[in-house]
Length: 188
Image 1 (cartoon, rainbow, N blue to C red):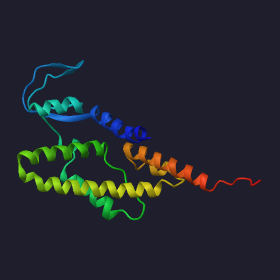
Image 2 (tube, rainbow, N blue to C red):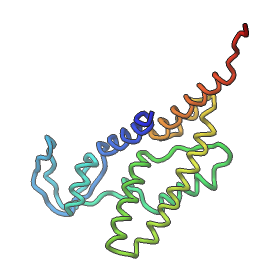
Image 3 (cartoon, one colour):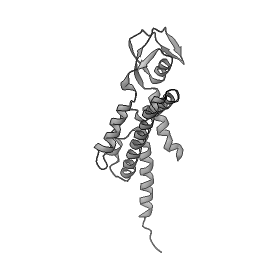
Image 4 (tube, rainbow, N blue to C red):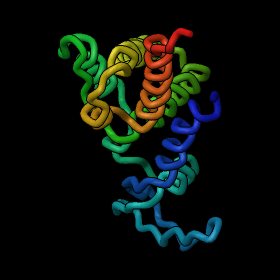
């Protein structure tokens, strides 16, 4: 059961790692061969699209930078938090940006890493963790409440891949429990 529960999280992370992102080259780079993938050549100042895992290595090596819209930022996290906790009423659940949870994990990890070398990031990290927990808890409550719904298709459209897996597991448990609790047996 746990494997089924966590596989959507791992699947979404793998999909994100293989998704296409935009980078801007900081310097010229000759053609490279990385794990059967050809990277480059890159020209300084030009924009390129490539898989996230390749782009991440180029960024880490100082050859490029990500476009801001391909990463999660504190203002974006704050906007999502506001929408989830203040704007929506009742059981409304809005779609999250593509690959929200993989981006969130990477954003929090990056902030935590920055905090270890520069304490000025400590406040942003603490606030980001609080906002992330609020978003996750708010959406989790909505998913649990909606899991007993018979209108599964309309609910699934607004959920991320990770949330869809959770919803389907909870819905299955609720439906099994409901059918057993209301099961009518012929008395002999």
